[in-house]
Image (spheres, rainbow, N blue to C red):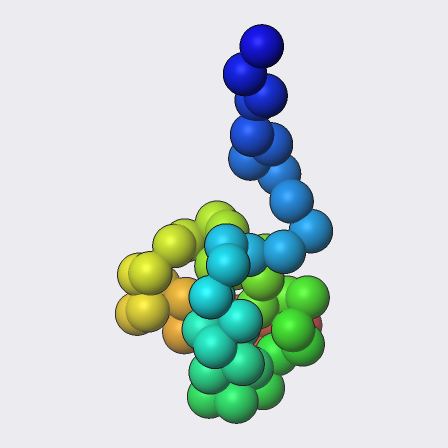
Length: 58
């Protein structure tokens, strides 16, 4: 039987660690927050930056 791939993981897709690192550097959010934002918004960097700014204000 084929295994179902879980869509909810604790990590972003393989190779996306660089995206997490970049987002944490440019927006000053935690890696956990960056992973959550990347899962939610994908590669929409404008939206990612806007959401990260909102997180910093809280």
